[in-house]
Image (cartoon, rainbow, N blue to C red; front, side, top):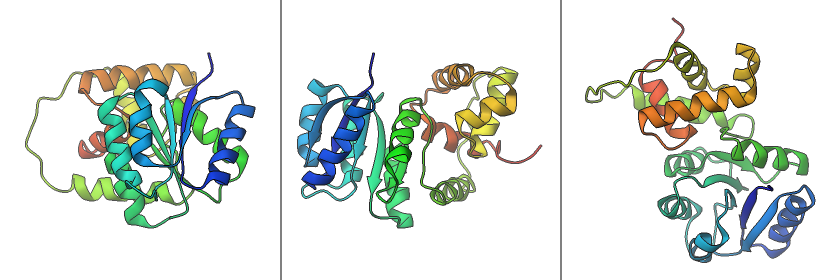
Length: 216
């Protein structure tokens, strides 16, 4: 089955071009809208698995749209596609629940690859932006948190979690551990369930809070 995608951008020419590229690549574009409020309203019927979302919209901010979409369906995976590479914009989007952040300067192939990786659960960032996010997580992790019971993870789940904390993609983790991409995804999904987390963004922050990004 093809992946269902919703495109949200207030520029009609850009929105139509992105939707066309996605359709040509075999994705099912179930909605293409120009306002955040409209995206929130049509999401239950469109049932997107991935949302390609602009940051600057005429009614709601892209950050607020992310929050509302995930409140409707936590399984929705959001890829921000924005002209802004400002650090605060990136961090605000990720904190709201966006799985990735791609600049509009990206080429067609890079966009299609980003949508595929977002659907697979990978955190996707324009080069240089991933470091900003990891740095912010490390800064937040430096603030002492209340102790909590840590669920029991298998050795391999912990190993995968450690590599997630270091910022590796699922593909890179699979290559490092000499396993399939699907096996890495299964380990991540099992870990998310045990930790009662919803996505790769939350998992990365948890791993850094546990100090798993540091070399043993």
